[in-house]
Length: 86
Image (cartoon, rainbow, N blue to C red; front, side, top):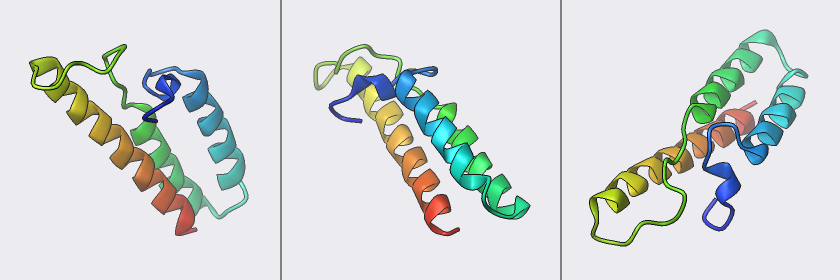
């Protein structure tokens, strides 16, 4: 995500592809597992970074960016963990 800004938007191509493959993968499992993975996927899909570029350090924009970036990394990590637990 650090070098590929296509993950930053709400409806990016990268997020769309991730959603497609995650749904295909999760469809192989029991309903409880599918729902757990879908919940993690939905949470991640709702996250986005509002900046187009990395804001300069020490600015209010950078603080907001850092929070959004961390939320996306945490959301993606949570999704990975839910998939791995299946």
